[in-house]
Length: 325
Length: 303
Image (tube, rainbow over all chains, first blue to last red; front, side, top):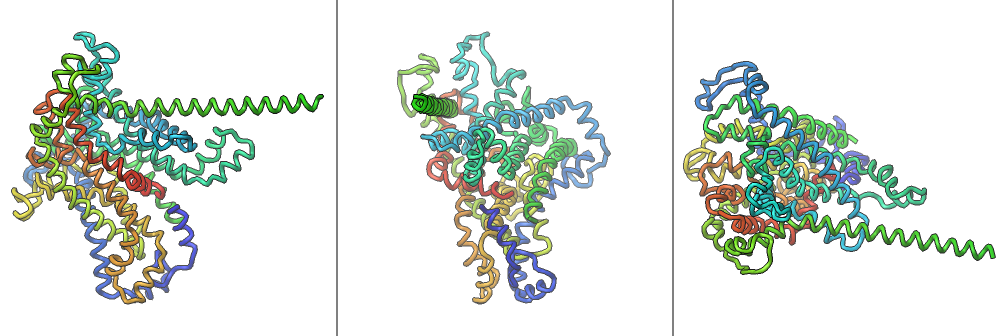
């Protein structure tokens, strides 16, 4: 809806003062003359303070991560920073044992979300969009975990997965010593157990977003498809899904970003060790651990940055294109 | 004769089609009921466990009915876990952070959506990109910055940003600015631009235009964002475990992890503690669902 309003606004001729659309140069002069000196200072401050905060606390540290990743530094005394070239990276790729497991766990996380959690969320949204009886109740049940913090999700997961006291082993009759399944302790299965817990929240999140998108689709489209003899499935895949492209991309980006940001659940379960290594937990453990190696930690962060840049740029390019339409 | 058979056949297929449709609906209902029950189970299980004293579950087993149900776990978690202290910490960080982030984001959104500058779009892109970064990308240098960046004694008992409420507030504001600016600027773009012209004609300056004309019209988006931000900042676990040291100053979500093992010795207590910490967000779920959802979708309907 937002989309339509802006688009129609941009087709009307640019306003002489304070317009949204950048007017041609001739009018630009006129527009600025309408802003007093005081107004211009106010505007600068209104944009300047937030911009400063974002640059200083987010972008500067990002850049610093990149620079520091080529150095060796204990963290004290700026003059002690030594440039050591690519050594942090070669150490990371060859010597540091948790690195490749962490990368593969991040990839598994992403693939699990992309192929199971997100499609399930989309599927449920499509079902709930049919306006069947009780749809609000179902929506509420599925979306409830979205408001919970991942920390709480982690605790509730422990209540389900605990070897002796957990619901799962109790239901499976595997609570006796020696017969227990250690869902969160066994490094062969704990990643999957945590992924199921993470999906508990992700599915609802995707469902809410997608449902809102579906509600905005013009019903006439579906009616037209039905009149043309399309089955419900055909109508969805050939008509509705293509129209939903903006939402599809948002959901895709959110899925990717959430997978790269995965941290809380792994950290709460076992500090992100023993089968739950992720790039994010490696960075964190490097800071709060005993031996803080700033350069090395930054190198891990840069790897995380490098893989995050893909979805971010993809998203920005699309947003930019839409802006120009 | 033939006519009658045709009519008969027609009505038979219509009936079977209707029946098939009915069956399909029933299948759909069954599927959704099963999914909903699965989805509710973990929380229901936590709730159920939290009402049973440890001795009872020990005696009867965790999966059992009967015995004593009481609030003793809540009392123990509340008192021994000192939950009120951590709730207060969260409020100290949360309230100013949400007000500030909405104020700053609305000012930024106002300047980029209601006026055209050269840097307009690049700034908006910059903000959005900053918002999408995983926090761990910036944490290593940020940790050093927090240790070194001075704060006046009135705001900090150790003279720097590290281990301070103000530090926590600052990082929340900085990190959430991108998303809020993005949502608010999309919203403000939909307001008719004649509003600005009218304000100018009436002799209002930039600040008056923002504060008395545009901001009040942005109220629905602000309400949705406030709900979302309260939930997100309340739910944040990461920043405090790195940027704070003193356990007593931890916000509730991060404190919970320290309490586990220290005070929350059994699953019944963990359940009670988790439920109590989840209550504020569950209130959001039950009372402010509309705001929460519209906040989420405002961020996705465009861009």
